[in-house]
Length: 406
Ligand SMILES: Cc1cc2nc3c(=O)[nH]c(=O)nc-3n(C[C@H](O)[C@H](O)[C@H](O)COP(=O)(O)OP(=O)(O)OC[C@H]3O[C@@H](n4cnc5c(N)ncnc54)[C@H](O)[C@@H]3O)c2cc1C
Image (cartoon, rainbow, N blue to C red; front, side, top):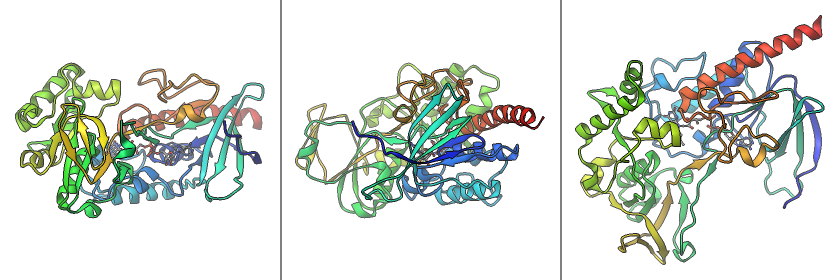
């Protein structure tokens, strides 16, 4: 086991320590500041919203309509389209942080956080990663009364092990490194995964004259992004006001049949049991919102293939025994939370890095521990957590300051 970097500095934080400067960390910090509570925000990256700035492809737009994606206290500018581009979303987040006066401490990778029961304080160790090649790194220990976990559901890449992967010989990358299909023009690309990212990367590859094959191992719910000009997500949210979730799920599946047809013929199986919303809530499996990939599958520009059995030099053998040739592989295999790697001595989070207590009560733990952005409900879940967490901490803060000033 590697020895931890020795602490060279100790910082007392007057207020909560927030780990993560993505939408979740920024929104909780803004809500805290609006209530007069100072805080320190730490992030391992060198910018806010590093997932959006550093680990997403160029053509990305918000998957959901903007009304469901804005953070507490600041709407999107009026001129923004219904589905803002990645650049617009990042601009919005930067403006959001600036307006709220949130100035995260960057290049601070949190490697351990532990509650010191005797002192009644959180001790958070962060390593300065501004110079990753440096021989000696410095670590700071931040000490404070509250800890807010905002490191996100997408903190680390999922990279599956495949038999024969070392034999493949061509470039293998994760979708988080993909920017555009330009570099793949004329190449046969095996895209592993059929979520929103996998489908959209295939579409982008087609637009750049590459030849994508999409590996579809599991069943997946694919929904039209819009029905008669109305966002399918808005339809679902509206129906949930009157109908139980299982019934809304049935309506969504029916709409998918009517608008997208039988996808089985294309090699895409719909899950037989749980509906799209239930699967999202219980297993975090986001339904795909089709923005054009299905049409390219129908036209033959994107080939759908079953799961991979093993790789060989220049291609892969599939579970049905067929072989597919490939010049490059892109793994659109998702992400996972990293909380268990650094939050020690607390059983608030599961081994998978999600709060053990289910939604809507998973935002508050014991001893001043909080979580924002782990409800599998995207940015609207982030916002509602942030408001609740800031409110709760502000109450404790007011109590504490009124006793100390008395
Ligand atoms: C391609 C893609 C498209 C999406 N589109 C939408 C959409 O349209 N609508 C929607 O609602 N949701 C969408 N999502 C879901 C997405 O999770 C949220 O949009 C949002 O980014 C979540 O914010 P967050 O702050 O919780 O997590 P993140 O944005 O991941 O931010 C977490 C931050 O924590 C930092 N961090 C992690 N570990 C550490 C550590 N140990 N120490 C210090 N810092 C650390 C990271 O550097 C990062 O900056 C999308 C996700 C992806 C991947």
